[in-house]
Length: 273
Image 1 (cartoon, rainbow, N blue to C red):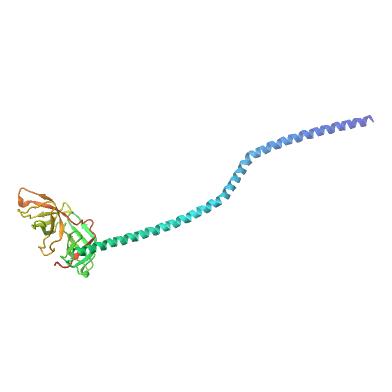
Image 2: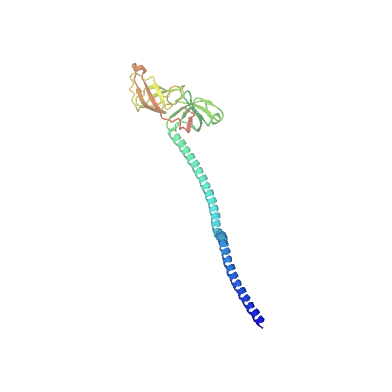
């Protein structure tokens, strides 16, 4: 009986020890699990948060991409509209230029109504030191012949020196090979004006009569003498009178009425009446 009690006590003690070990083990495992969870949280949570942020961002970008597509479409529409406006503007500029040209022709016709004329456009020019010619877009098929006088709104341009079927070459009055018999409008004195090598905007007036009173600002016109240019076409204005030791050698500088660098439209006089 004593042995049975002793065994019972030992069994109880063993049971208590086992229970204590189980509790200790359980607590130990709980702390270990918490440590592992903490480690996982350190590495896993940022990744999880990143995926969550990306998901939310992509979800919100649906509207952004839709707006972007709309903006692209609107931009393309604006580009097309701008291109159409530029085309319209170019067409208006062309119409305006054509109207200006027509106005020049009308003004020329009215100004020189005493003459029978043919309008023409300048299509090429050679204004150099040794040559000053232009090419116009009318020729023999239009009734153009050599030696016909060419004029612009502001005055005398020159005369035709060669002709093709559809074009004509005009030697301008600033060409050094051209000499025009002219008169000073205020005194009716006859002079000769000729192109120079130095300047393509002025002429040199020579053979001034010794008794002629020549003043700056006097107008110079064609005299009608010489068989090419009709009388009374404006040539230019006396810019300077240069006196020399011999009065017979004095000369004047005449500024041309026509700006040959900007000459675009002309009239060819087909009769000299």
